[in-house]
Structure formats: structure tokens, C-alpha cells
Amino acid sequence: MSMFDEIHKQKKELPKVSNITKKVGSYKYNLYQILAFIIFLISLVLGIIFGNLFPACGSTSSFYGDVCMTTEFNVFLMSIIWSIGFLVSVIFFAIGHIIALLTEISQKK
View 1 (spheres, rainbow, N blue to C red):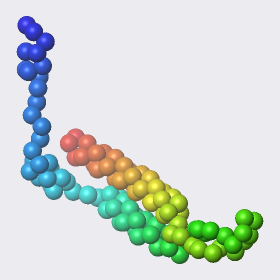
View 2 (view 1 turned 90 degrees about the vertical axis):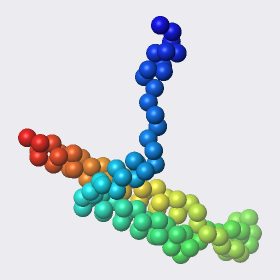
View 3 (view 1 turned 90 degrees about the horizontal axis):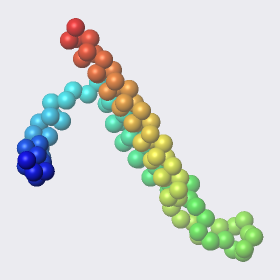
């Protein structure tokens, strides 16, 4: 038997988009997972708001000066808020998924 015949036997088709949407649509989210989505959306909005509220200094009046001549959108602060919000939402989603798996296991017994 050749290697290509073995690969051909074990080859599986890729899932269709309609099958994926049916599986995702039938999944029931618990409170922790819904809270994770809400935290993620709030962190996206807060990142944009705080990036605009606390601008970064674009250029100063002199090399050692304290006075900002131009201010720019604070991309660094926005990315920090986005990354922290993403991590917190992933942690909440993982906790919710673990709880969902444990309740599914307890219902099978």
C-alpha cells in the first residue's frame, strides 16, 4: 500500500459554513460567557474614549520643555485597555465554558 492511499483513506472533508453556523447558533451561552462578551465590547469603547481623553504629546516647544505644542490620539493607552479587556473577557469566557462542561457532565450521570 502506498503512502498516498493511506492519506486518501484518512482524508476528511472540511466542514461547510452552514454546518458551522448551525453548531454555533445552537450553543447556549451562560451568564459568564455573556458577561465576557459585554466586557469585551465595553473595553473596546472605553479604549477609544480614554485614548481621546488622555492624548499623547506629539511635539514639545523645546527639547527639554514641558509644554505640548500638538497632541495626538493615545494609541498606546487604547491598546493597553483593549488587551486588558480581551484578557479579562477570555478568562470569564473560559470560566463559563468550564461551568458549562461540568454541568453537562453532571447531567449525564
